[in-house]
Image 1 (cartoon, rainbow, N blue to C red):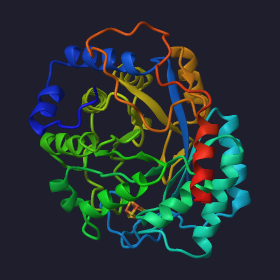
Image 2 (image 1 turned 60 degrees about the horizontal axis):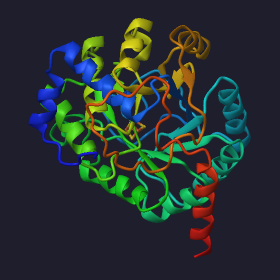
Image 3 (image 1 turned 135 degrees about the vertical axis):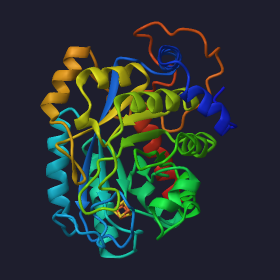
Amino acid sequence: MTRHDWTKEEILEIYNKPMMELLYEAATIHRKHHDPNKVQVSTLLSIKTGGCPEDCGYCPQAARYHTDIEGNDLMSVSQVKAQALRAKSGGSSRVCMGAAWRNVKDGEEFDNVLEMVRTINKLDMEVCCTLGMVTENQAQRLAEAGLYAYNHNLDSSEEYYKEVISTRGYQDRLDTIGNVRKTNVTVCSGGIIGMGESLEDRAGMLVALATLNPQPESTPINALVPVEGTPLEEQQKVSIWEMLRMVATTRIVMPETQVRLSAGRTDMSREGQAMCFFAGANSIFAGDKLLTTPNPDVNEDMEMFKLLGLEPQKAFEKKAKPESVSADESQYKPLGEKPKWSRPGHKIERNLEAKAKSKA
Ligand code: SF4
């Protein structure tokens, strides 16, 4: 059964295990819940860049920091469609559209985003949005447009969060996740390591995520990319060993979640990324930019996949909301066995659900 009662002490104990033991345990759980040779490829597209009123200390898009990113107004639907088609031909099964907003405001821009969601949905790709805070009604409108996932990261532990962001609280984040949960849209929520937080804070963030019931369907683990002009510009980059520990611990406490290697992947060698896949990472962000920070080239990623015998996961291959798996966690799952929740007809069922809701 997936546990929702993890404590910080238990998670710290896992995080601090001898590395080989930690990796073996994480890899064993990973094989039990997922096909270890499949990795989801998601393209992150900045549909509105810069000028954000928030003060997230890691973010070059905050208007108050003096960084050299170029701001852009909301992209057009046709621009987004062209980028999505490009992403699909590069092997992506999901497009995540990010807008540098504090929260979604009803009106023309939100209507355009809804049209973008409908457009990408028709391309048979999973659509995700990260638009800041949303109300229940806005989450429902996104669901009706066919949104598959909504990203809203917790960033860090509740305690450390206050050191990084002052313009909105941890509870605001949890409220947005709660609003998304009231719809059939899946939740994507994770955080960032390397912001100066302690190991207790890393464990605290995982407690906050793993005790959500249900747990997020996907969890991005970002390594801070310090950007000149932001308050965190002087931070030391995290080592691959810290990343591995974080990925492995996330996999152990959130066995069914897609764990995504996100920002900071350009600083990781192929060997390092391979170890992360072994430790339970099964998703990457593709594209040469992650909103504003650099990311490996798509071709490089596909070469790495070939080298490692990895296959991009197809769109809608995972079911929308994971069920608990009750089998013995310690059993080894043989290579190549299909995950038990693999459900090819999934998209049709979701669409029927959305239609039923819109008629109600
Ligand atoms: S992380 Fe998001 S909310 Fe925070 S400053 Fe950047 S764009 Fe704004």
